[in-house]
Image (cartoon, rainbow, N blue to C red):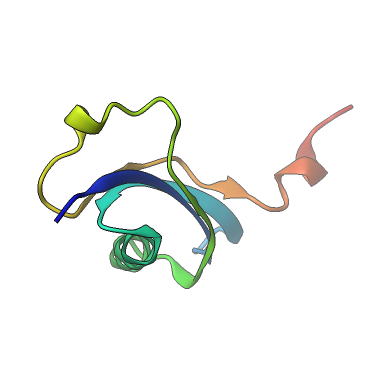
Length: 88
């Protein structure tokens, strides 16, 4: 079982509102990476979770990838309405 590193962008919702959040995942394929990220988001309290995009980062050394499918971490949520509050 050869594992790869993936980045998974999710569209989700929490108590603040709709947002995008990204997870770093080690998985066999893009489908498994998406499922692991969705599960992690739901366990952290996000709902309406939908996979937006899954990709393999270009700068990841294959030797740095572990041997167990897992979620490595996530970014802070970026809320969809944040642009409304920014001053030009």
